[in-house]
Image (cartoon, rainbow, N blue to C red; front, side, top):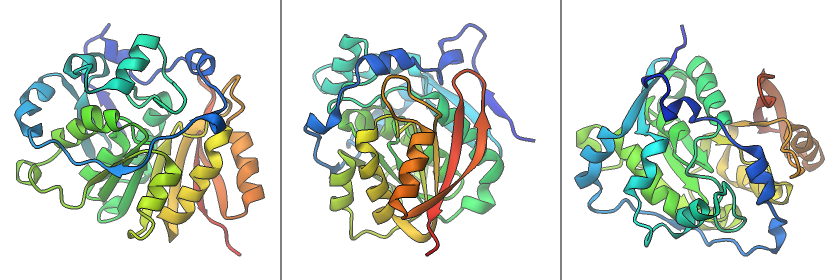
Length: 294
């Protein structure tokens, strides 16, 4: 039986780790077509990452998702690890009390509700025997928990997020918390990329394609959805699968799953199917997306 087991005490900050404040996002959302986006680059783990692992472990939590166990830093403890001189984007967001600053910060320091949905779906529908040895891209990865699930199930995983800060201070430490000791100096194909989707696609256009792309809460801004589809097109293998988790509607922004499905139909490169839904709180769904059959 599937079990999503958070090992935290009642009343802990972690009870709300996957909750989000849509009003905060809406308040800070602007038309991103006028915003200059960050270039893409590969981010290498810092050479001293292993020196801090004991500290990370002491402030981490362990989650059981089906036959996979993953570990990551508690969201409430993240800020104590940050040097504000080296985390300009996250710090700017914290000072603005904002989950979104267009072109600067895209919410990667939080684990959003739809990510929990997708982890639960993976645990039931993509156990170890189905995902092992697959090439997986965690697109818009944030804390990296989707990619970490895939890695711990035996997949080869790349992580991509808009913010270099997020990758260096959150994603990479989380990944290292899940590596066997013998892998801590040999990442065995794991890579990390920052920057705008279009620029990431251009940077990696000649790389091997992915069997599975995992992405959560990435369609809230319609201005960026074409970039997302182009990234899918370049990075997905011919018979690959995309699993996209999102809300039905992002109030005040214009994005949402029904709107995104209409874009998919007009674009004609992909076909989609709703494979999971919830009406609790803000309505949410998971889409399975594949290349359209011509």
